[in-house]
Length: 492
View (spheres, rainbow, N blue to C red):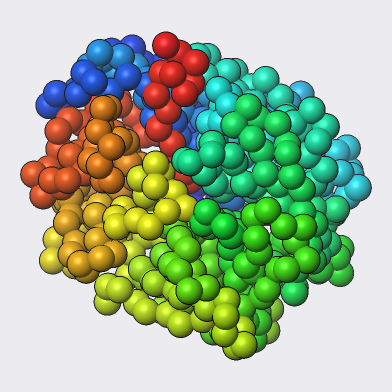
């Protein structure tokens, strides 16, 4: 019998949905631009069965992919489970079989296999469109191919056996100039190993180049940044070990004594030139973009956290998680490859914290760029807790266009009972101007117990919605989303 009532974080608005859905010709407030033909694809987690441990990380929930399909001003919605090996084993057993996040030593004996931890992946973090294929990603296993029409799971993908890492990042970067995809896998040869494999995959989807390097210490390497010449590998703070895993703990703990790190290496090299720059305590999860600035300098824009963001990855010294240090700021980081010092300079560009799920106009990935988009909580626009069913705490109620050049901020406000998930920039068809297009993202409407897809003009956010696509229920939680045109998805 499935019972979520004993899991405090899985009740009320956050109760798992546990259903697949098709909604045709969704209700729309406003007017959906008819020039948008494609799909906004979201990936996140939903618990098929309650976790074995009440304090498990929500990152361990089963993968759920959904899609808002745009055709000539009409929007359909589809949601499906990502049917991984793990999902299928649970369905066959009619119960939860898997223990703590990324710790197979805590699994039910019927599935426990520490020698093959990538079979545990829930593939719940980020969608990817490349070489005409749609994938779901999570950094503890291989990508899973998804049918872009039906959202059926086609299975794991190893690039014709050329991908040698046991893992694959949730954040590949696609070079808009060459069409190449840069990707990597950390803990590449097994749990808690210090191997990092980095690959270049051409625009046809074939592996063309591999580099193998060692990391200074084993940590979460969630994202990366690329320039036309270099790859940047940021991480910091989180630690693990086989001893920790065998002791039955969640995969990661936070060690505030560990420096934050940014590895820099040439894209066309063999990895032997990698240089590790050290910085102060930081939780370095997501990036906006980077570019070669000339004279040996690289500029990186990123919404890095001051310290540990995840309360479910506790400090290793036994101290409580500190929410006051779990704040993310838009930062400009400059790395000088000609300097003998292995440190960087950092500037906080706006004085208030932001959501660290930053997005950019990907047509300018790896190039000098002016705008970044992300959510933030505007204290001047308070959340209406009474109307929203007494939901507590500050929520992300605004999307912002952050101008890295002028320091200007343009903002969209979702409403007093809405909380915004990660946004996505969608270029205006036919335009080549950076930032000319639409901003999309799902708003959770706590007052109406439903989800709404926001569509706004990215150059005129203050004007509010162009349209809202209304769903008659709460969608599953999103981690990351991605827009794909009909041609990119093979739907034309």
